[in-house]
Length: 447
Ligand SMILES: Cc1ncc(COP(=O)(O)O)c(C=O)c1O
View 1 (cartoon, protein in one colour):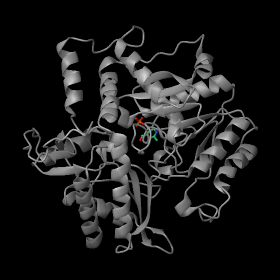
View 2 (tube, protein in one colour):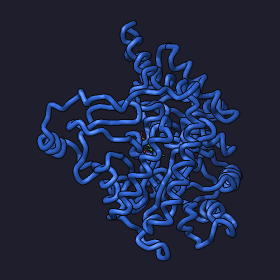
View 3 (cartoon, protein in one colour):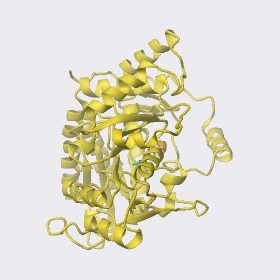
View 4 (cartoon, protein in one colour):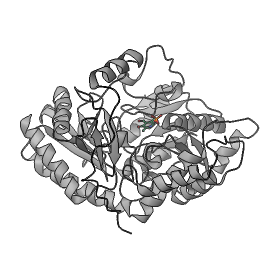
């Protein structure tokens, strides 16, 4: 089936905001934690449909970041709306907890297992990616009897205590937060190789470094290693398949479980399979998910092997909202749409079109240091000088603002914040890709 065509160009911005802009911003700043906001003049978004979002002044934006990489099937897909409205009209329970049976989570577990690598046949639902990773750590520690978890520098795995401890970015860690039983291996970052090697002539020193790390900073056995198959917050660092082949065998040799964090990469975004772990044939013991598979619903999941799940027997694990019917039904509808509308193929084709366009643009704009990623999870690393690779930090922020002024929303990441992140809903079409490229081209020229 083809991607649902929606005439989302004609919609008026009916929704508005009861606040005037200045009051809203001031109140948010007064009552919220000091959280970052995108853009010099942050947007007040009030409406969304398909590939577009509207601000309170009625301006329409092409959404090329999907909230933060959460919108896979487009905003307000009619199938998702109908499903949720139907459930509400039938008075289906808004909450059941994991202590009762309900068919929605069971069906979603069956669907996920079908898409998972062989052997990952147990599922636990959570409310977020952080919680999914927390549960994966606990299970790995329980199953191995070990505590040490290895992460990668430049990684991001969440904002809770244990996941924050696995973040390879100083900006995401708090001094007050103790970091125990964790150590970091060097990043597989080909554009800025920590070993000063080139991808075509290296010997995967980065993979070898995992073994060195285990040998030099653990007692020789580990509980787990957690790795994002494409490092999202780190700036869409995308190591080749061989890296994972080598690292999984090292992790297993030292008794650890390999956790593949697919919070950003899952839901078909990388353009080949629903999970990148399966596409790359990564020998993972657990896969964690969230973001895009719920299309904006607060849902995460851990997929694991029965033998590891069984290590939790004899204790109680409970999650009040995990597997509640509505977010689960939204995730189910999202997975169905991804299949029915061929969105994984579309992610591959549109992703290739964006990469071609950016590579072409790199001939004209010296700011582009590297273009990388998979499918519709693409990064454009901005540098001041291609030789020195000096990070173009202020310029990346300015570039995002310039694109926003031209009505295209993008994201930003990387250790220094100089990598533009492009992760639109998987429904993007060729015309919209061309609009995105044109806006990026004009904005780079204006820089
Ligand atoms: C790779 C990865 N893992 C885990 C998380 C944490 O997910 P959440 O914010 O839903 O807790 C994130 C969030 O950005 C992420 O990118």
